[in-house]
Image (cartoon, rainbow, N blue to C red):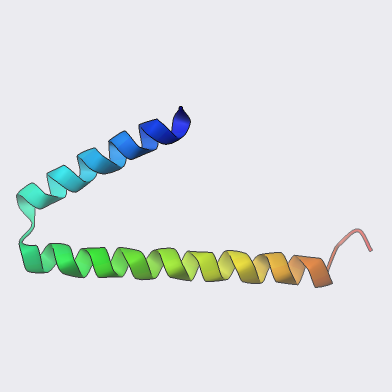
Length: 58
């Protein structure tokens, strides 16, 4: 059920943002947030790959 709370919070934030930002501002924010998510995904993949090759247990 924890993920349901996250969805509720995200939905609330989205609704609040639509009330105070213009459509152009929302489009830019959405694009920037997608980019941020992709960059975090890439960093996590790189960390996982590096940890495979540089396992401190060795």
